[in-house]
Length: 97
Length: 197
Image (tube, rainbow over the protein chains, first blue to last red):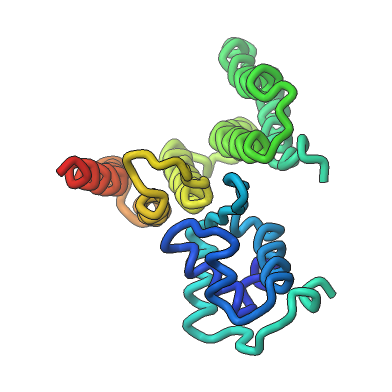
């Protein structure tokens, strides 16, 4: 559970989850929504996958991400977004320390 | 973590509890030993068959997810068997505060909490990406709605068995359950009918 808190503390990852709430999206579509490098986005995706908040599946040449939030995790996401938890964006490498 | 051994502690703990409690009851009431023996054996046998037959040799991500769900279900079923067994053991040990009414309320609360826990994890099931009759976005939205409804229903069910007088608790809990399950079914029917137009 503490990993889920850490994952939701980053606004970029929260925004990724909000986008995936609407529909599954490819890695390229998600990266286009953010002004960060692809390796950085890839690291964010890895954090989300390790916390079991998203699932990735290869469809041809694309990787499609789907959201996997339980009801409580969804509520936690809304809470974190409402109160702006962790407004300073962290680099994914810092979360591993 | 070994991908073939997720989430073993909870179901093993529940089955262990059932075996211990069932053994105690068999020694205290040997005339109903077959009933307790059946209760002790059915869950581990069913689990063993599912693990060995259904999931034999499957180690991919999707099989791992399904294994987790089966093991969580075994743990939940074990809890719902262990609670009345445990209360019966306590009653036959001389704790007369464990009345039939108390046991009925306890079972209602446990069922409600299990239902709420199940509802919590409904949206975790991944939606199909294939272009079927319902879009993945629609499936996601419906899973979220259903999960929330089931979770609230489970909590309301448990609340009924905590607070409502016993004479009215059973019909009230059934009304809560039917409403909580009926609303997602109604929404599914509306979505299906709208899709056909």
